[in-house]
Every structure is written in structure tokens, then in C-alpha cells.
Image 1 (cartoon, rainbow, N blue to C red):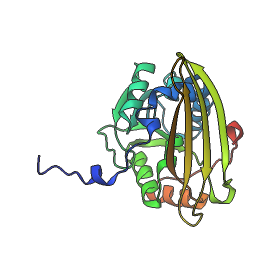
Image 2 (image 1 turned 120 degrees about the vertical axis):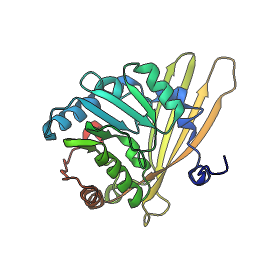
Image 3 (image 1 turned 60 degrees about the vertical axis):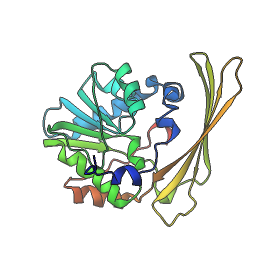
Image 4 (image 1 turned 135 degrees about the horizontal axis):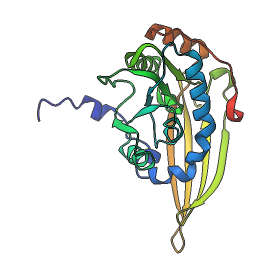
Length: 245
């Protein structure tokens, strides 16, 4: 179709291996049972600050549906993600949840929700403009009195250069060793690099080593507050350190 707008297709970088050909390993790297506390925390915050009864919830950047696995006990969940492979995982894990393809920067659904959340996928907003777009999407999908909850994982003031996370996992006939290193080559801009190295070992096969570089946004907390207000929200900041971070 010569009239089709392909500008997004040629300007967007490809999704990392973790969200394409390596998506099958996500349940081993970050299993669903690890999300129960986070889902409980989201639920408590939403209930505490909503100004309407909460039944429906929109999860932007839902990934493989591990958080939804627990949220669906309390909410009618709709999940949205850019990765078809992650959405396939989510549908298999949570057949009762509605999953849709979409970009949190531009998504517009016809319905409104009582609550909207964005978990760690908010980190892929790389500029103030993108972060504002995500907040505007959340605002556009909320019913009056509804509540939006997200969280800040990294701030320039507390960023730890070359911080490394590593662990090993086993399942489905495969051994995985996983390492993530956070590095900021230019502290003056709004991004830093997360390098993922995954070692895959299967019996009788050579070891695979897959390296991914994920670009993540990093903004001072006042920037988050200002952009939330610009999107139309009354911004309430809860200073917490959950899960050791």
C-alpha cells in the first residue's frame, strides 16, 4: 500500500533479544512467583489513592504477564505490550486476561479503566517527551476518579556505575546463567545502558552466549513530578525502598 505510513517502522530500533527470540527464557530468568509482593504493593497503593471503586485495570508494558498473574485475582486486567513474543507468553500464563499489542506512547483504546499501571517497562521511555507521552496515555485511559501508579527505579543522584546483577536458573532441560550490568557512558543525558548477557546450556549442545544492550531512561524525581502534573495528574510521591532497591 503506497499510502501506508511506515515512518515508525524505519525509525524505531529493533526490540532486544529478550523480547523476541529469547522471550521463551523470561519465565526462567524472572519467574511469575517472584511478582506476588509487587502485585500486592500495586494493589494496596491503587486502593489507597483511588477516588472510585476499582474493578478494571490497564497494564501498559505488561511483558510476559507475570505481574498480571497476581493482579487478575483483584482486577479485570487488560495488558498491552510491543512484543508479540511476550504477549504470547502472557496469554498462555493468563488465559483470563485480555492482551493487546500497542505502544504506551501512542496507544488509544475506546474504553476507560478504573486504574492504570506501568511497572519497570516505564524505564524504556528515553526522553522527557516519551515519558510525558506515557503519562498522557495513562491519563487518557482513566475514568474520572481513577488512579495511575508507576515507579522510579533509577535516578541520576543515586545511579551506581557498573552495578552488576547475576544469577543462575534451571528448567525445561536448560541451564541459564544471567548477568546484567548498568553503565552510563554520558551522565549528562537522559539514558543509560543495561547490558544483558545470557548463557544457555543444553545437554549435548554447545553453550550459547547472547548479549543484549537495552537503553533505559533516567530522570530526576522532580522531572517525573512535573511531567505527571503536565499530563493532568495530581502527583503523589511515596518514598519507598521495596525489594532491596
